[in-house]
Image (cartoon, rainbow, N blue to C red; front, side, top):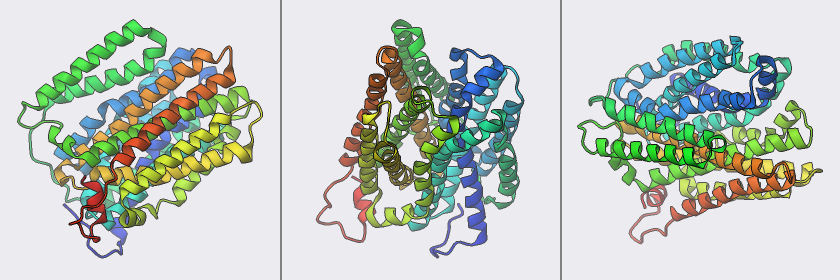
Length: 472
């Protein structure tokens, strides 16, 4: 392991490596949101049906969410630097092919491959950070910058997409290519080379089982509104059986893909549930807001994208401060505050009507959501990886990223079903009902976050606030 020293001053090599990793996680997150504004243009140009069009988004989510656990464990076993660079090269090629495609099916295939590559770069990048920077202030600072870049990419992707779509939808696919190539060249030079392969065998059957379960789960929730309750129930039963088989396998193999004992960590479990809530509820809200601004209010793609700008800017500006705040107050308190801001932000948008107030609803709502992401997203990543051994950092990272992607797919499916069920007769009521879904998930997230706060033990010292908060 290459650890940062206790000296708070980082040298050029550390900053260079961190910059490469941040650039890639920014691209990964950017790709989740950037295609949304471009969908109408893609549909018109390629003649895709609405049912087929959703797979431009869902194809990426399937590849990303379905393979994250495998990606994280592969990074641990085969070498994080090696896996990161290979996956980044695939990401660049898939981005280029996606921008050149003139057939809807091939575009969806390129998106799926791109999502698969991100499933390997994201956990590899996070585990490189957690094994390069020593646990404590240095790691917290690095993680806060890293995760804020990811959150900024997701938030600012809509804004950038609005600008690029004005030039042509293909630019939303081609723009990441040169950035990925530059990051690939820089990563080959700057990422630490003391990244040895982890010990242990390859749980091939477990990898196949959990990957099939995750792919089918995401596929089930995405398709649920279109295929009916019977097929959805049957598919869900198969998913449950696959998960059960996976657990059975992991308890019996010598070198499991997922050491189930890692789930005994209450902070790690709360962090995973927290990211399901945070990312899932926001993806659902974002979909509703896009429909509300463009279809009901008639805003342009750029106007809609700019409405999300305050949230993205807040996350970007707060990036360098979150590590210090986590050191001072503990991640548990920050997550609770972020959960309160998330719930309040959704509550602001429950007042949607045909003549919304920018100053009274849109701006304060977006500011609250930006505060929520700025506080919660880095804190959840710090909480999920603290106390985890170096040889399982990829696993912890993969679990956390999987939670976010699956949460996004599940909540989006629920929100979409609620929105479409009442949009024809009462569009305003349908928008409110859909936002209520995100708000209810946020309320659950607040309860889970609050459960992590405990009174300090009388024997604990004031010098260990993070340990007291995070080990209960």
